[in-house]
Image 1: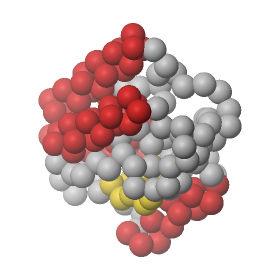
Image 2 (image 1 turned 90 degrees about the horizontal axis):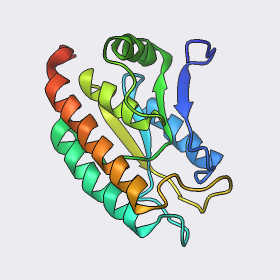
Image 3 (image 1 turned 180 degrees about the horizontal axis):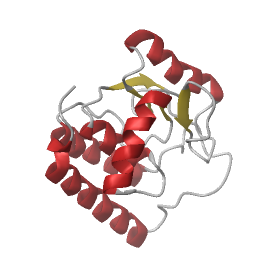
Image 4 (image 1 turned 120 degrees about the vertical axis):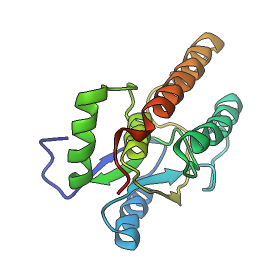
Length: 170
């Protein structure tokens, strides 16, 4: 991200299940709320194509959005939507925290929520359409992998709760 030349940084689901038209909607949140936010898609409120969401993944997302909402004391509407954006200025703050606390997940979306929570950044959502994957297969296909993922989600949550007051409120 440090090499990025633009004003905003965006992460996108590698499976291409969210289209570029929806990415433009995510970026539009900066025009509404300013640059000091974490902008995210919300697949749970947007249109879902048939078989785009495995039912167990949907239930897990629904549960963990409430768990993280409680921990971060801010509404989390879609915990694992991989399409998120932040300003480069916000990234510089978060980069410093990542150097202090480390990287939490391989995908980046939980990392961004965690560090947004530490910096007391508002998280703004916009509904996005969720399509069947164009590329790859889900990493959460069997129960053992889902169990490990759920355990890591709980662990990250505990870490958030323990370090919540590491950043002064803006």
